[in-house]
Every structure is written in C-alpha cells, then in structure tokens.
Image 1 (cartoon, rainbow, N blue to C red):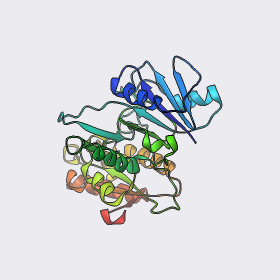
Image 2: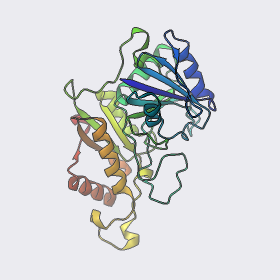
Image 3: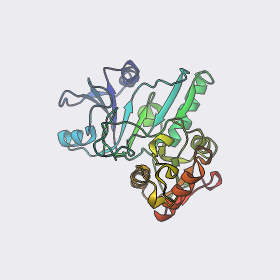
Image 4: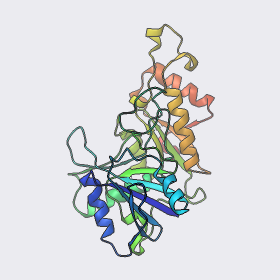
Length: 296
C-alpha cells in the first residue's frame, strides 16, 4: 500500500510536519521528477515541491509514471487559518463539485470534480483529538473537520491534514483508518448542509466513530430560490449546481468505500423548507438513503 504524503516548501505549516516525519528513522532518498523531490520509508513516500499546495495536480499519476508503483492514497500537509482566529487542527476532503464549466477555481481543482475522500478521515479525527489532548492542546485548539473544498486534482483517496505521523504505521505503530467493509460498521456519512466546519455532521463522528465521505456545506449546494423564478418546488425545476454537487460527491464517496453503505446526513436546520424538500426528493431519485444520527 503506497501512501503519498505531500508537502510544499512555500508553507511553514506544511514543511514543519514534513521535517518531523523525515527525522524519524528509516527514510531513504527517492527519485526527483519535474521539480519534486521524494523520500521513501516503508510504504510511505514523502513528496516535497516548491509550488502552492493546491497547484500540483495529478501527483499520484505522475509518481506512478516515474516509478511504476501504484498509489493507494495521498495526503497533503497544509496550514489552516480559521475565520475566528482560534487555533485549530483540521482535516478535510477536497473537490469543487458545485462549480460549473467556465468557473475559475479560486484554489485549484477543476469544476464539477470531487476527489475520492480518504477513508482515514473519521478515525484520524479521533486520533488527532487524542494526540492533542495528550499534549494539553485542548481546549485551546479546536479539533475539527472542514467541508469539502479546493484542489489540487487527484485520482486516489485524498486527505488534507495539518499534523500526521502516528496513523501512518511508521516506527512499528499500527496504521489507523484502513477501510474494510466487513470489519465493524460499513455505514459512511455523506454530509449535506451546514457551515464550513460542519458541526452537525462532526457530532456523529465524535459520538459514533463514523466513517466520513464528502462534506458539502451550504455554499457547495447552490440552489435557485423558486419564489424568485416562479416555479414549483419540485427538485427538477430548481436550478443551480446542487444536484451535480451531490451526485459527484456521492459517486466519489461510494468509490472510496467499496462495499460500504453511503448514508446522506442532512443538517436539517441549515435548510429552508423548499431546499430540504428538493434535496430529499433528489436523494430518493438517486436511491441514496437518508440517515439519522442513530443509523451510524
């Protein structure tokens, strides 16, 4: 199982964890390609480049072309700046499924696309909190998921995270978050609605230890108000890219969790009545089950 861990020299919060990883025993120099240097340790490959973290597309495919090694997953080490300015440690899936052709992505990726979400997200959120507590970082630091956003383009299960090493299985420790649909619960959360930090969806992860797929906040579900367009509230008549965003994110989540049951969890209070009705109707059309907290 080859894991790519990607860092950039342009971001101290990316380079710092990379240096901490490289300080561990067992690393060997790897190939350099297209301005990207690499280091090898077991099944982990640390890649380091000089571009912005969201600017290097297809690193997984490019690694495979250079080495012949099949990549199983990719993780990006990146900083996070909270709007509240409260210190936070976060992780999240990537993609911009709500943008349409012709839109200019503000932070990499491509319109109408969502990466396969890493199955490690839910288990690693719990691990991150455990580590933070052991270092007395809680409650000063908030440990949280973020909604799906930005690039770069990848084709393998992907995760953005700020601090990582224990869960990778280096130094003799067990790897954390490997997906197995036949071991324990196979329910996977597809979060719809809410703000950027998806608190209602995250509650389920804290309480249930749920597997996590894509998390689409309200801004990633653009819906045209039917009262402005003077149309019925039937989902077929409500414009916007919300249906594409749901479809693309569902398909990516399903591909990342083979054999899993994908349950859509709605942040009910974040939607107006017509929005909730339209989304519910569309989920039924897609044969996507709507899950309540107890279902996970």
